[in-house]
Amino acid sequence: MTTFDDRESQFEAEFAHDAALQFKVHARRDKLVGLWAAKILGLEGAQAEAFAKEVVIADLEEPGDEDVFRKLRGALNEAPRPVSDEEIRTQMADLMGEAKRQIREAIE
Image (tube, rainbow, N blue to C red; front, side, top):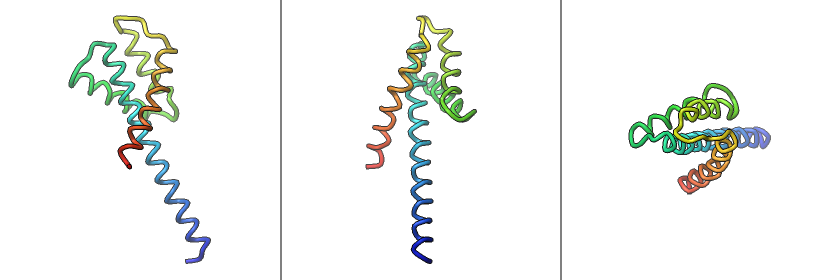
């Protein structure tokens, strides 16, 4: 192999690793935001975990975060207290930071 081939392989490996990490971070964020919404909905234990899994699965529908937002918005329309779009988006952003921290700690 030439040096160019070695570099290309290294870049491909780094890209694959970064993509896998991003997937894990998004999945963790989706679970965390799902658990946050479940609490508002009054779900606990297995029901809360099941709802959080539904949120994770919803993120696979299309690129970006709008599929997760729609899932949360639809569910939280039935919440015992009003939840604004801004509150949902703020939680999604805040919990992205928490998800990154958790994943970073898990791989160290």
